[in-house]
Amino acid sequence: MNNNQHLSMLDSTRAFLASTQKMLIDGAWVQSTSGATLDVINPADGELLARVPSADETDVDRAVLAARRAFDDSAWSRMKPTDRERLLLRVADLIEANARELAEIESLDNGKPVTVAQGLDVSMAAQCFRYMAGWATKIEGSTLDASIPYSPSNAFFGYTRKEAVGVVGAIIPWNFPLLMASWKLAPALATGCTVVLKPAEDTPLSALRLAMLIEEAGIEKGVVNVVTGLGRTAGAALARHPGIDKIAFTGSTPTGKAIGRAALDNMTRMSLELGGKSPVIVLPDVDIDKAAEGVANAIFFNSGQVCTAGSRVYVHDKVFDRVMERVAAIAQSLPMGPGLDASTQIGPLVSARQMDRVLGYIKAGRDEGARAIAGGARKEGAGFFVKPTVLVDTDHSMKVVREEIFGPVLVAMPFNDIDNVVAKANDTPYGLGASIWSNDLSAIHKLVPRIKAGTVWVNCHSLLDNAMPFGGFKQSGFGRELGRAVIDMYTESKSVLINYA
Ligand code: NAP
Ligand code: MG
Image (cartoon, rainbow, N blue to C red; front, side, top):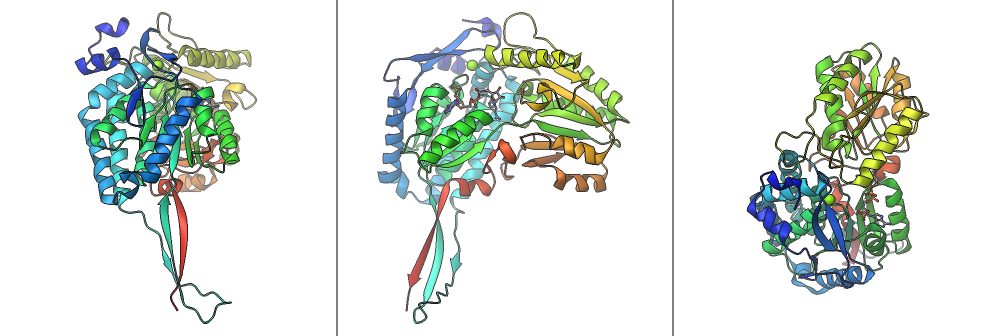
């Protein structure tokens, strides 16, 4: 079938890939009504990996109706929190029991190293279900004594209830397909919602495999539906569907805005996790080697296809040359190859389109005067590989500094004044993440509140924990995922007032 054939793979992965892929609507595995399919390409060699149904508005409508029925009428809607918790824990166990297969599927579909897929994507997906399972029994409102002035002879007792928001439409990107599916499904199920999930057209496979595990866990039909298809057809149909109560989206800022506008027409609740151009600030007291390793990881992890990727680095001019020389050396040393090869640290980009987009940015950078001290080109041969690239001689007038590239491309700039670096760090429409590299406690604590970003890391970057809220300032999004905060995104608050006089 393809060049990855020589790389070792579980029999169960081969069997999954060889089977006819169908999507899950109302407990049935189905083709699209139109019969249309989408090709799923292996980015490591450009070969066909699988075909999935291409859903259109009719399919989306069926899935939304199924989720609506399941929310309004099924046993799911009356289920006790402890039973929802038990089901989610079972999903977590099943993800772990099938970890290697899920990791291989993710690696083949997205391109990422299988070691990363297993150690990070799959294990964090399992942990996400386990963490959210715990919330199922901890959703609570508050009680209050009301004093209503124009009704003095009555006595009142008030309380609030958190109720599941209803049918959730979840639209996810291709950079962490299984994990993003889990970030939406786990809180939705913990709160008692039902879901229609649309994975990205480039990486639909792990969501389909996850849906099988959700079925196996015993979650009843219609509660979770997965429609594979294009964003502009299936995704758009989901976002504007009046039967959806909440849209949960992760992806680019332009698509997030389009989805937000469509959702607003129906007052559909929304959470939007969008793009970023996250700054990395290296102060002069750092250990050069440690800081350089941190800077390189911040951008090159997942081939730079990370919403919080540290894609702009500002290094104090006392250490700029030494740090950037070391970052360039690391960039040139990272082994590139197919994800299934255990020695690979840099996989291909997800698609030919994404590779062309990233190469277009590198060219634009050079045209505007930037200089590559590492990478700057694709790796010749099959697959969509772009070499880890470090650009210097850059400034804020350049497209490569201002726009989200979503690839292994770092732009580096020196600074010598804290006020100036704060202004530069915040000179972006985005505000998703940032990191500070230093052991100067006073400088760090002064900097943290001045950075406009949903997460500020210190001496680390892009590390996430299920208990910590995650989301963006400014055009990086709307709402927070994970932690206690996510429960509010999947519930409505109902106020109840009782006159007991
Ligand atoms: P995208 O358009 O934001 O796609 C994300 C998801 O939204 C996919 O499932 C996509 O479906 C769907 N979608 C697209 N158009 C839609 C619409 N009009 N209505 C409803 N859903 C829609 O991202 P992309 O096109 O794959 O990538 C383009 C750029 O976005 C990247 O280069 C990168 O800069 C950025 N990006 C950012 C993130 C992030 O996490 N911040 C993630 C992915 C991409 P399809 O798969 O069919 O397009
Ligand atoms: Mg693919």
